[in-house]
Length: 256
Image (cartoon, rainbow, N blue to C red; front, side):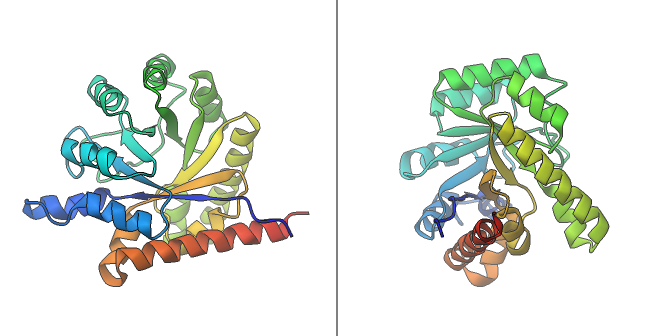
């Protein structure tokens, strides 16, 4: 049997910074968390620099860029301020997400279809600085087509509604949402996009979505940092790598 196609793990370290900022000072350090996650098998680090700096701050991004050797993915809104920061820092990748100050976390996908001109300009500016751009969107053909039209090479499928349905025990809704993700991943890959996924994933849902051969990267944050409080970040990241690889093996063994 051929080796399964690889799937990457991006670890979001935002909520290490949330804990630090709750009291102030330097501890816990999100850059140290990134280094631990990389040593445990993370393929890259994601950090979301928000307008209000509620968790990650500018200095964190600069230190991450200077100290980690794996790809840095900067989550950001497509605002002038964030684009200027990204073009100055030049992370490996930038994931454009919707952002509202009152939300606790990113609540939905980016409306690319409704912001084509703005996003086309943002994607071009970032690409001109050597930054690979992804768009955080729902698994919706209209949004996927729009992502292609604005020149983004990558999308990240928002898995939040599916994970919420799983957590609520709503099997019918979960099945519907997963079917939507399956169709969206296939449609996006067929359109020439690289497909990532993230939001709300835990061990069970990460294993399941890793069965989709079109999905080549998962970005996971809150669950990993939460589990690490009890199990340690090294152990949690290693376990997540294991369940993702188990899902990939299931996919390969089911292939005709």
